[in-house]
Image (cartoon, rainbow, N blue to C red; front, top):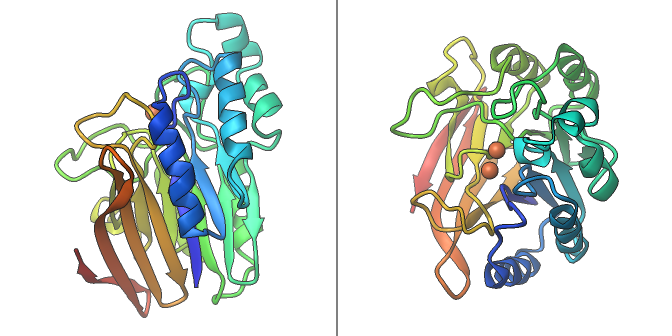
Length: 270
Ligand SMILES: [Fe+2]
Ligand SMILES: [Fe+2]
């Protein structure tokens, strides 16, 4: 059994210090194999925001995999935005913006979807889709395969038409062929889970999605700060949303899926 912690949209610069401390404490109690961070580490891609994000990451005593979000590219500094959009991310967070983590049981591939020209919306390149095939395609079926992006593949409940990541269909076709089980993303500041086929009807194999809300930012959108804990094995995937209640993080929602053939069936929720 692999445990992944999925945090997103930290937006350092607008963080709540007590929630930051609460999150670090909670992560230690969860003991994840990996902490996946799905972008928007900063509010305005400022140096001091990246330095605060770096200090936070350094305090997590587990392996981390981090992708950038649109807020990690400067919006108003046009020279930097177009000439060196992810220079600060690369300097303070990680040189690799398409990071990869693997063990005998799990393989996690991050893909940078933040772009200078469509600052808010994201996109996946053809080269990244090739990379997905190359990295995940050769792995045996017992390895759980996970993608991490900032921009979402699946709309939230009750909002069928938010902008999804560009080239979602092509990326999902490659993900389906490679046996990807789970996609982690953020950007919408809402935590939810679902099956990709509820929106992408051309995909036949069940691929589950976990979207995370904002972990520590005060810029919440009608939803408390929260993050996801995923427990993964080849035939079972449990999704737990852990929400901030003013004093600590506690499980607010739980959904379990069981694999049957190429389907993930909901085995219960709470
Ligand atoms: Fe965000
Ligand atoms: Fe975002």
